[in-house]
Length: 214
Image (cartoon, rainbow, N blue to C red; front, side):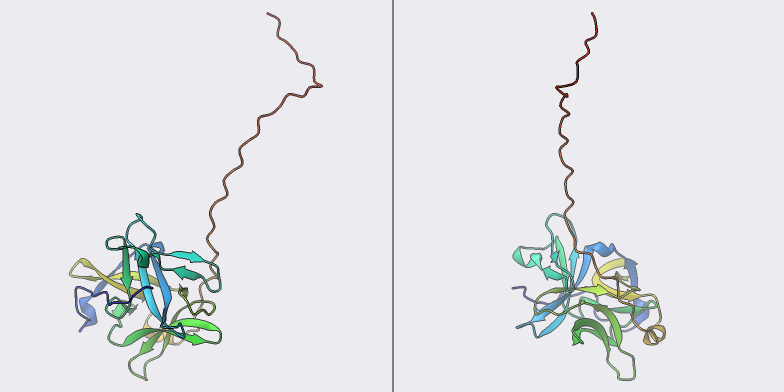
C-alpha cells in the first residue's frame, strides 16, 4: 500500500507570486495519478516523477481508464523517483502566475468520469478543469491533462526546486471563459514485436544445377 506523506519543498508557500519562476521539464518523466483514499470512494492527486532509469517508478495498463501500478511503493525510491501528494509538492500556474494561495487541486467524480480540477479558495473565482481519467475506478488511474496543460518545476533565485506546477500559458480569465479541450484518448503502450528470423532459401530439386567448367 502506498503511504502518503508530504513532500516538502525547500521554500515555503509563496507570499508573492513574483518570487517564483518556472522551468520546463521532460513531460514523459511525470505522471498525474488519481490515487485512492481508503476504499477508493474518493481520490486525491498524486504526482510521480521518474528521476533516473535504474528502476521504473510506475507502470500503465489498459485504457479508459488507464490503470497505474505505483511501483515506487515496492522499493526504496530515494534518488530514483519523486513523489508529490499535497500542496507542499504541487500547485497551479497560469500565465506565469503562481496560484498556490488561490487554488487547491482535487479529483472529483463527474458523470462517469474522474476529473482533476483547480478549486478556488474564493467563490468569486472560476473553477478550472485540468485533466480527466476517462473512466472510473477505485484504484490508481492516470489523469490525462487537457490540451494546453503541462508539467513544469518551480524555480527560486535561479535554482530548480522540487515543487511541480500544473502549468497553462493562458491567463486565468481566458481559461475561465473556455470549454476545456480533453487530451486525445491515449493509446495503450505495447512492446515492439521482434522481426521474424529469415528462413534460408532451399534449392529447387527439379532445377538443373549448372556447373562452371574448371
